[in-house]
Amino acid sequence: MILQMLQRQALASALGLTLVATAGCSAPQQPTAYRLSELEQARQHRDRGDLQLAEARFAELAAGGDDLAQLEYAETLMLRGKHAQAAALLRPRYDRQLDSAEVAGAMARALDGAGQLDDAATAYVRRLKLRPDDSQAALRLTELLVGRGDAALGCEVALAALKTAPDHPQLHVALAKAYLARGRVPLALQAAERATVLAPKDTQAWLSLAQVHLLAGELEKAQQALEHCLSLDGQHADALRDLGITLLELGDIAKALTTLRKAVQVAPDSAVAWTALGLARQRGQDLVGAMAALEQAQRLQPKAAQIYISLADVALDLGMPRRGQSEARRARERLGSQAPAELRSRVEKLLLRCIVVSVLADALCRSSRDGAAIQQAAEREARDDGLEALVPEIAATGAQATGHVRAAQARCAPAKPLPAAATATDPQP
View 1 (tube, one colour):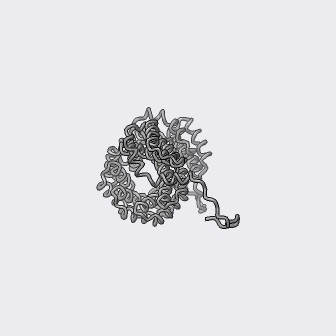
View 2 (cartoon, one colour):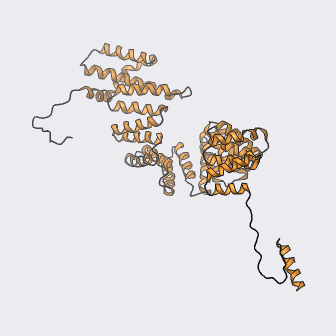
């Protein structure tokens, strides 16, 4: 009996258990219930989705000086969309504890979510110095750097991260975008293809590959990549948009229209998709529909010069040169100082075309044949719009704008009377 008890105790000791021997009692012992700490209780509330209660509990613990609770509090605030509040909470520790990777990571995500992207990038840099193996931090930092125009540094960050995580597909996608922003198409293609091999069902990898092909002018390959992306997710808004644009470039207007209609249904807030739909409708000769789509894009993104350029083009096709003139002016106003000279020149020539068409159409509507007066009126309006350098091009512009002049003249022509036999019940064309 004693030997058996000793054997049991030895076994229990090896397993880390404690046995209590009671003479003459063979009833099993009930294990003592484990009591959750207050921190663990708060985590359970958060895990169950009760974020408001979890936030309150973490706040109480953090107020008592518990550093771990403060980090958990910040994480809970971010889950509730309170990124700016989380950043303010973490700021003192972030400024004081320069060697804390955990604080740096939490601060980076808080600043990122609060839209303070430059400060977030700085925090991600600190995080990576302390934790170079943090692939997610490297991925987000690469995206931020490319977004603010520092693609070269973005490439460096992604390449450094890939040394420790060579099979991270999203890092390859980010690297492809960084190379693409630098115009390094062959390297971008290599990175994008690697991403599709590592993650063949990742829609972002296929979208990235398609975008590389688009920049390279390989439209058929871009179409194939986008269609594969949509086979994985038929509601992928970016893929629908880019496929519509690609089909439009390939000349398949009917399919482009179908695809872009779906794109704006899936993502009604995408100004780019609405602009592309407007251009597709314009090419399909649905000018009223084109104007409506472009006006929606304008409402969504009122500072985008390209939308106003497209509106001016459609207005000219509709025979509304004064509307086109107004849109071309607004396009010129929205061109930043860094706009390419070629684009600025295009807008100014479009504005001149609208002016010339307006003047010629007005003259024709008045049945005026005074060429000298028409030329003087066009020159005066061109100078008023700051187009002195383009005044010598007025005559050539007018000769090339015959179709637009006729469309504008048609709007001032009196309506034709109905045939005498027509009645109110006759079907209208």
